[in-house]
Image (spheres, rainbow, N blue to C red):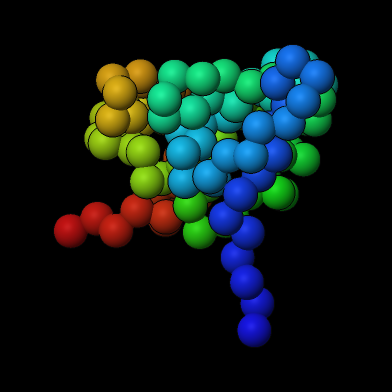
Length: 112
């Protein structure tokens, strides 16, 4: 039986913090690094590119909405329509959805 990874070790001040994957709100590309934003407001800088981080996180929850952003669908509150549009997270943060990623993102939503 395949077991889904529930935790990820995030770097912080020379150590690693075990973090529940569900607490990751979104990830933001920063050159060869990725800034990982948590529900509690903490931020962790990982020494990996966003594409590498994306491969580590479950596809069922995380979707790439922009070349610079990977978002956890469980923290998305609203989608504002537009050219690419914007997602609004439960904490009020708004992130752009690129035109190129919009269709893939919309396919992950169940729209009635």
